[in-house]
Length: 624
Image (tube, rainbow, N blue to C red; front, side):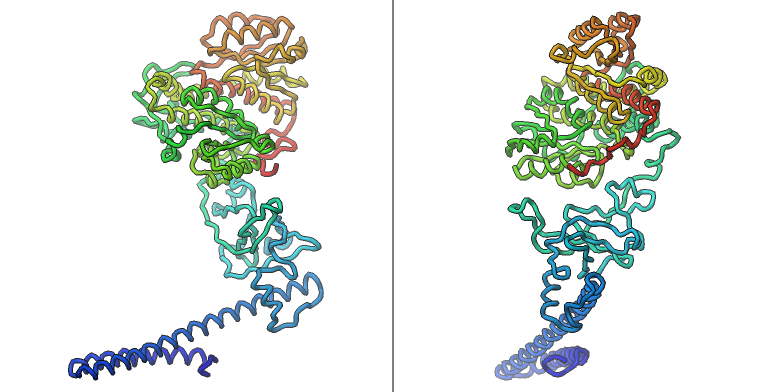
């Protein structure tokens, strides 16, 4: 009962009755007003105002009473939950059942037993034995169950926790992406998500503040189950290597603007038919680049004092492969940063800098921390990822999604080549207003259209690559030399060989040959030299001659149209030659890496190691 002594239902009926009387009185008033004088009208208006105030007061009491009843139900539920947890966990009863000032204060502060949730570690363990009915937070001295204050969301009886959406797509396509410091509570087929409102900088980023319940968007995945199947291939890595022509088409689809865009499985890749190993004579007229994700920020990027590419592993090599072109077309200095080293140095950043964060998964821990560092410095943040909804795609201002498709194997293959193409398209777009660069841009655009069909031509030579792998299967070490655009290729080849075949390999800048690496060369040391036709061809010829003079066992990658180099070394004893088509220098790394992706794959198979899951490695590096 409230202050009037009426139960809440009676109070509600009283409000309804007074409302009806007020409406009836208003009708009578309108009739009397027509006949009444001035004084009578004033008296009637005063009576009506008093009646309205009375009804409003009763309405306020009703609202307060309803709130009190709701709060009482909430406290009763929380009190029951807390007492039950205390009995289960600590085997003693610190509070008697019923109202308790201490208990209400504890609930009001969102606390766990006698410890505030703000001090509980954020690490969550899912109890598999309880069929995912409870999530527990680890803290000292013991684990304690998380309480839920608001109504839960009933979404089903089965929940899956995964670091990547592709791991659960065969079970469900509905996902909720969690943020840093989120805690999930599962119970009775429902879930609730809590997060800390703030972090303390003075305590080194430790969790502080009140834990509050929040809502996260329930998303539907667009990944098909067929994308996580091998599809007739022996391994995911092999499948993803052969998917590169289609992946390149999808990366350019809607961005390289042509009159007609064919399907990915057609022999013609982007509206231009080609035969194996040859370019097409007729190309679409005036192709252009459209990057909707960056349109609003192009002027900021062009006005930047520096363009900084921050990445790890293969993503760093992709950035390195295109650095020279970005500098050439934009005229802006380009810096390359390994994310971990960038953080260790606490490198200086300014508001006039533009930072590109490149990651296949979009969840790489070092790259994400570098992103947070750059955000604090006020730099413009741009993301290049292959995963929609990833942390990098959410936290950057704008960016590009590769559309390369799901990549399951730990070794990055199609994501690497698509990253190169994506950054090339950014450079082309940034330079579209430059008349002096128009000829160069047209050359690149023309070859860009041919890339998918030329990659298919390389893939047809897989049997030759497999034969070469058999010759190298028992080797213990491999050196890879490259220069200019192909220095990144040398690094990527070495990384692929070491991470999957577990053979020691090292990528070396050919210009540094005489500064130490030459001492390793003898008749027992195999060495790969990437020497396709470009502006540095003569220097690479010199490198080959120096290696041969030390009786090196060479594997040369040369251009099909470079007859002089092919004829000179094809018949040389101890030299194996691999030939690829020629495209403009900035796109050549896309073709050059494919034979060595196949080489590393077959080396791994022949050596008997796990291709898709190399030891000690993970696809998404989510820890430092």
